[in-house]
Length: 217
Image (tube, rainbow, N blue to C red):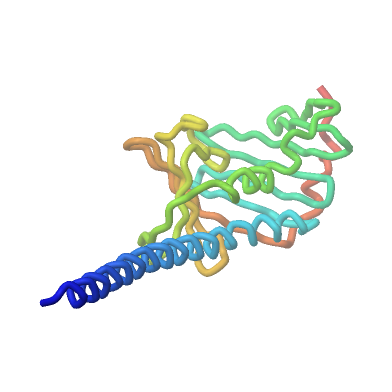
């Protein structure tokens, strides 16, 4: 083979190699973009829930651990009601007029925390922290049904039990049925807490009123 043919052959081989390398690079970028788009699509579900609740003047958000343990949060405009039963202890709060009122049913009294409405937007504040974090996706069967989930690290806003806040050892999974949030699971080591989620847009307005037979302590 003369020198000219060798040069042509080498050039052709070099072009083929470059095309192969270019194809590999293109595939890698396209695959990464697909994964990114998939994540963005799932993130939209969390963002959609946040935006829906953020713009809703009335809604309730209930977390159920079991028959005897739950947390019920209701919001109506600038008022909120929180009722938590956990480990045989119940706490009730009404938040309105810029104050928080702690209700004690046993003695029919209430305590006023003036100029305190820290938990007025408890649910949307928690979702706002979550919606822009990095996450992993997956599917899991719960009570014989399969759900898609997003898993976040260091999130404990919705847990009822004691977990290490902002720790990389804590994982929280948000399970969706379509765009409906149905379960939240918090995981730390061997400890797991699965909560059923009920969201409603109908709220009893009487919840935001201090009972007339309660006296201020």
